Length: 255
Length: 103
Image 1 (cartoon, rainbow over the protein chains, first blue to last red):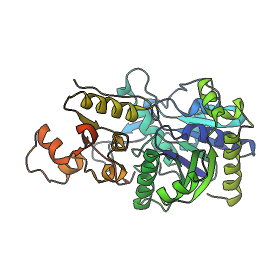
Image 2 (cartoon, chains in turn green, yellow):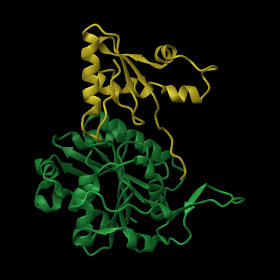
Image 3 (tube, chains in turn blue, yellow):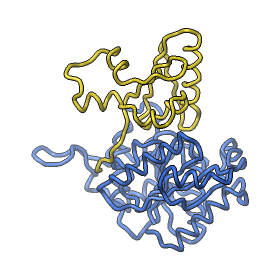
Image 4 (cartoon, rainbow over the protein chains, first blue to last red):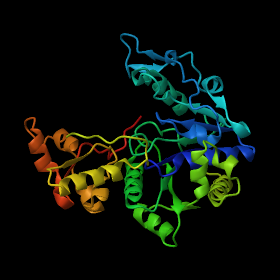
């Protein structure tokens, strides 16, 4: 499966995608977890002690030669996407491989080559080798603007709040307009605490709600301690709900 | 004063800015609340409601679509594309992403 988590900032994308990736790997799948947020995100939720794994090096992209057509920057022809993943991802617990693009550390002007290379590598991964679980940045900037093209299923994480619903609705609309691929788009209700929350999210986004993850203090505590939810509170209701989501999507063979 | 509120997603930027804007306006200052998020939802926290938040045309869209023949002044932009919120706060949206772009 190739799955991207999107949604408003703070909706819970990292906590859910990190837990999702870890549990999917425990079921015996090859999992590549990817993070295309320039701010810290997925690493902690996966249980990686490091915040900054080395970014993809700048020479992974090359400039168009004079007289050639097409975009100015392209993936270095010597870089094979599968080899790139082997080389530039780091290992997370449960055998998850973790690949991230350049983070804002030092001068952010130096990051863009690494970020473009990341995008090429991920978009060109051949099918079949990896189950890809992606944590995209909050908001609408990346999800349907070339950074989520690799995904076959997009999960929009929505909280039962007006701002989160509005963001979910916008993302659903953009998915609908996306000419790139007939992606499957589903909602994940997060921080659910009242009976009407799931209905509110289904109605507010117009999407099928594929999972309802309860509001759970254990997740907040895991974040405070910089620990992966699945390590800190493996039996808490929110982690169990994410695990059910993994099982449901694996059974459906959502590709 | 010109004040920008920044931070990680979900940390409370929108809520904080809306309370600052409303409080300053209540104190008698003329306040423009500028939503610079490409996924703008400051209107909801300011209290203009989600329909009005969605209806607001971003200033960038207005300029891109050629509704303005000449480069307008700040005051023109704010008065033409803004919306009045509670306590007299004037809300304007800088830019909004509405359409997917092929990669």
